[in-house]
Amino acid sequence: MAISDHVDFNTFMEGVKRRNPYQPEFVQAVQEVAEDIYAFIADKEEYHAQQILRRIAEPDRVVSFRVCWEDDAGHIRVQRGWRVQNNNAIGPYKGGIRFHPSVTESVLKFLAFEQTFKNALTGLPMGGGKGGSNFNPKGKSVREIMRFCQSFMTELYRHIGADVDVPAGDIGVGGREIGFMFGQYKRITNNFTGVLTGKGLEWGGSLIRTEATGYGAVYFLENMLATRADGVKGKVAVISGSGNVATHAAEKIVQLGGKVVTLSDSAGFIHDPDGITQDKIDWVKAHKTHRRGRIEDYCAAFPGTTFHAGKTPWGVPCDLALPCATQNELLGDDARTLVANGCIAVSEGANMPTDLDGVHVFKAARLLYAPGKASNAGGVAVSGLEMSQNSGRRAWSEAELQQMLKDIMAGIHKSCLTWGDQGGGYVDYVKGANIAGFKKVADAMLAFGVV
Ligand code: NDP
Image 1 (cartoon, rainbow, N blue to C red):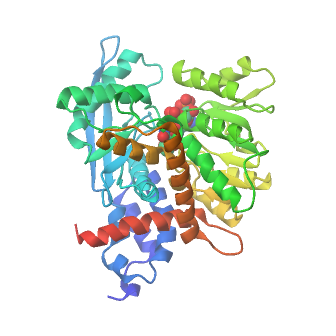
Image 2: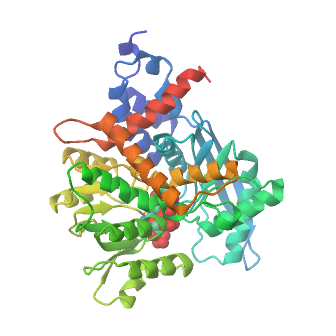
Image 3: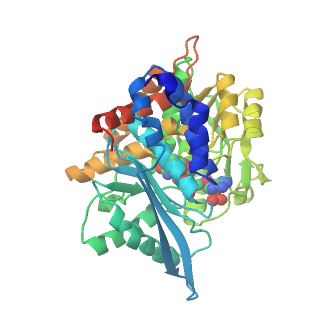
């Protein structure tokens, strides 16, 4: 069969849309990857003949289940849970668990699809998966969260395993929730095994896992800036989100001599023109994570700052932008505003925070623009190192892990250069990440035959 006989990009995307109705996030994620992969495989018959892209864009399986739990008032509540196992060509499925009311099968399928390429980019043997529930942890008591986590794991445990599928945290799932789920897994199976990552240090967790995604996104940014003999020092950064990824990205920017002027949550963003110092970041961590407070309260704690309800921070002039909250939080017009205001680099801490229009704007402006699957891979990379430590019954030191994280981020950057260097000083990091991630998974799939 000649290459020209295989389906073209538009026909391929029509098929993806037809097979995945009402799943816009998943279709968006596939399109962003397929735009680059179609050009890459234009002269590669085997990838076409073996339908590799079509197969990666069809999850190995999607498990959907009911999660019943009892609230403090004694009412029975019913939520929906999922685990999407997208692809295990290069290792056990690996990817976080998200608890948020916006979680749908489409959101988890897009995340598991992205995770497949991200995990390949780290160079570690991990396939792609993702899971979660439409459970809203906000306003719930600790005991309610515990009961929910236990019920969720009572179903999930039969689908995961240290060599099968290793979940971690994500939005709404931090160390506390991982603890509740690990406790239930251990109780049901009587197995103390590295089945989850993001564990506490006393029970198999790894140093720097908590910091790794945010720190990694800034290391990636430094690598991009270095291609223009530049660095973070002295730059003004705008960051969205105020959770795990956002606060650690802010911390690393400050450590490297940059100035962070915004953070946000789902209600709006705060602007602190004097800069969000380490003390203020510590306050945000305590307020958001431990007190489950609102970012808006920052303004009462730190006078001279402002809260902008219902808004995202992309209109604030900056050199660097780090979207670290959620998907599709930076739209085409936001991207145009950032470019017009002189922003030189964007490093995504969140997954798919920029919509397709925004991606095209950044590419056209030849910005230093890192897609999440490259720049936020530090978290899953240290999760991979946590798996290694669990399997080897050992623990690496913080200095060793910090170095490994830096090396992995530099390695991902190098892979992006290999496939994304367009000449004339411009690197298309989206293309670089997509092709590097795809090639590794695709070549493994070719080796396995039609399965
Ligand atoms: P957290 O739950 O710690 O924080 C999420 C932050 O994003 C909060 O500030 C939250 O605000 C905000 N947010 C969530 N949903 C929305 C929304 N719909 N609109 C506006 N703001 C929103 O999550 P993480 O920091 O762990 O995750 C943030 C992003 O990073 C996600 O895209 C995640 O997939 C990605 N990521 C995380 C990794 C990790 O290691 N944790 C690894 C790789 C990627 P509020 O408090 O109001 O809900």
